[in-house]
Length: 445
Image (cartoon, rainbow, N blue to C red):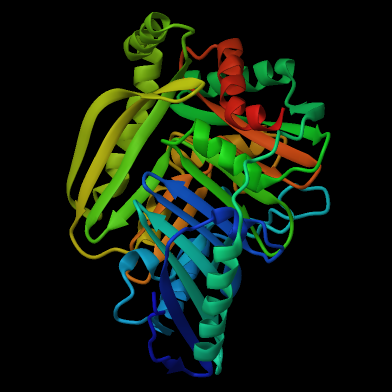
């Protein structure tokens, strides 16, 4: 198919130009296996995206990181020329995410070295597949942007056409594990949190653990993503390699927010149990979860808080019925939430309003975040924080970065957490966290 062309527009000295063409085939691995950084992968429902290289990068930190990124991304898209015939599926998007807490998340001994408070990039190469529609988009900046975008498009058309498919290799294997905290330390942390709940200082707090593993062979994150896509096709699969440092990846069941026009979709996900060895046992575990007063209370706190966070923006907020969300190793209570906005809102405005939900933070929010900072002996970095994409119209989708890890070639640090409310049992919560490690751990062992 002939590439779609457009005229560049210039604001000051910056020109951003996109070119696109339809593809017969879209080998995502050809994009992700390149040495160029940043790299991003996203798969949800019938849409998959692979992106690499940066035509423009936005970073921010501190309390204002959400609004700073929004302003910079909006200015970037205002300066972007896109051919009229390029469909929405193929138009450039900015990909990235945020840290869970404010403040610095980098350091010589931190697995989050290279991950600022927020980072987004407009990729040079973006391959998008939705249903059976596959597109290649090339984006360039600068005075010669139009010519550079066309050259990139031609080069990658040829490169993708020549790429041969291959099956993902075996997991790297694990030679050593280090848990933070230990199980005894975890009991102490949960007991302290329960004392705060009993005093009325907290309704809920989500405490997390980290599991650092040494790998026997070099890790290929594209291989992991291919295997996760087979095992967790109903989850949001994501991978982000920033300009430097490791790679953050995962398969999360939790959407933070999706905005299309004035329609907002999100969900309340909380409460957990395992999967059964037989269909009958599976149903029994699901029924037990639905009947659990502790888990229903925890999940209702999340749903009510999300409704309250959306109401200032919305003309209507609709709460669905409580259902079971089944994954390969765990089951959750889930309630869908849909809102209609009063006015047009940028997706990043909703991201800022909703993060962190009580599913990964707690209630009251400030007390819960203070407890997390004072209790956890590691930096969450981008774990349990928003990760996703935004387009020129301010639409986008962000997931919550759980069931995740940050990794280099020979080391990975996994994260998982559990919601602590009245009647939580430390040992049961410990077991729940171990279940939540499984999606990533199974792909490394």
